[in-house]
Picture 1 (cartoon, rainbow, N blue to C red):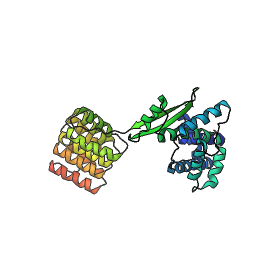
Picture 2 (cartoon, rainbow, N blue to C red; picture 1 turned 180 degrees about the vertical axis):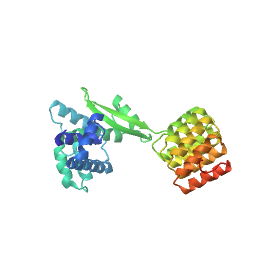
Picture 3 (tube, one colour; picture 1 turned 90 degrees about the horizontal axis):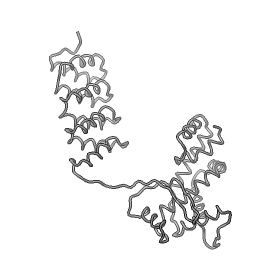
Picture 4 (cartoon, rainbow, N blue to C red; picture 1 turned 45 degrees about the horizontal axis):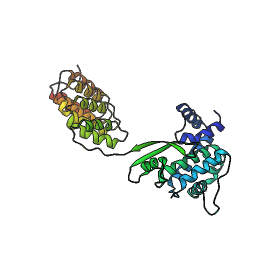
Length: 323
């Protein structure tokens, strides 16, 4: 793809409106094209400036948007009251105020080349602002829907995906909603356990630590045990892995747990995790441990881990070296 086609796609890429194949082509091109990389940075600056702007919408903004949009589609011009600013002018004024403190020298040239994509984004933005900010509308079916979406008491996060006018003068706005809620219950509640098991795989490490810490009390469950073993083997955060190890302490004699502990001892890169694994293995020792630990002593670079291995071998009446 050439630079002109990439420049038309950059605004849509930033807002997640491209197909996976198009996103990949944009990323491949921008990695090797400094000019398009600058355009991407300018798009981020523009979006950041718009995000900082707090718009107080007029009560009739949604109706104005509908009438202006229908007039434009039908080829006519809306009847504008000269003494009042219409919805499009309000949006343009908001953009101008948002960009007043931004470095515009390079940004304006990029905007000039992106008139059509920015026009499409502007329509989406009008729909988004109307859906999020208007809580007083005419008593119609559409008004009732918007009231339920934008109730100020609801903790709802919306992403507008499309804005489509209809023949009756209305508009259909397609959006994704995420609603935050609080679920309370005892640890032995199946739904609470299910949510905690899901939280153990969240992106936020703080959430994973807290969920694994709570799951420790339920480690007797096979499902919880398997989740703790998976966290110990695969979680990228050492603090989360340590919490999983603490939950597995009562199960250190279980054969599946011991297999995982041996793999972790050989592969984990965190000293604290490996030393705790040694303690658990020694507390439930078996004949297979001696050879493995003797091999580790010979190749271990960390003094603390090596000394702990040597002590464990002496406690088992075994030599730190192989013969």
